[in-house]
Length: 313
Image 1 (cartoon, rainbow, N blue to C red):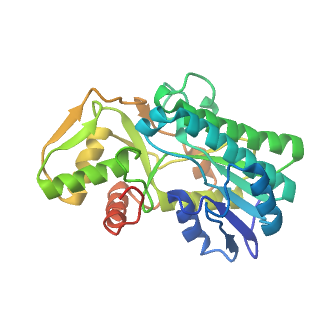
Image 2 (image 1 turned 180 degrees about the vertical axis):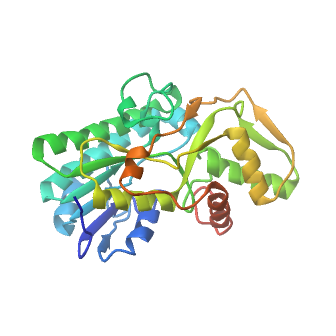
Image 3 (image 1 turned 135 degrees about the vertical axis):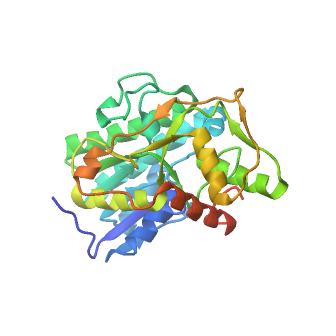
């Protein structure tokens, strides 16, 4: 199958977020009209308001990239918001999409949907086969519900709704607030500030967990590729195919940013999942591969940080 964006009205929900803004950049290469609406104009947790906006705007394709997101600390401190708000957003948008006859929709999830001790690399079939990582289970449960809601609409109403599960993303538009950020933007900020002060770089936990990273514009390209070439109930992993330990990542960030100061670990802080590498072979079989390697991506993300292209700065 092949879906064309030619002449279509395409709504990017969450266009001001890191992934949403990357999708807007990517869709500029397609001959389509990109629809966006700001948070002060439309509350995506308000189902009635979302339905009204969609009936007025009539999108033909939807990328659902809007979500309440954050790192371990934010998840732990705000479980209600992470569960409630994400459930409301995905319910409102998917319900509206079915109501107005959207041709195709992509729901963007997260790799945290998988069990904490899933077999590595993680295949799509690992979903719901074991306990989640406790530090982000609220967000994970909401995303699992979104996957299943898209699948339910597909089964009951024949909607062409698909789901994609990206690995850890980073790049322009990231959240660099140390109280709410993920590991990559946190390290970029920590190393930058240590470089200015000549101080040490503090790493949460033991530094031994392994993580996979993907530059956000590669993720956006993969999402467009999936919309064009994939139509099935099974969610699809989006990853880079390799992982590094947090301590290795720290030293890589320091090398890219040009700082060789001391590094200390803080074992009193949580490590999270021991390893999280996704099996992206299904996406590769559809003809897609990432283009930006880790060092290049870190350099680009640092440029964006210096330019103030992010939150929490």
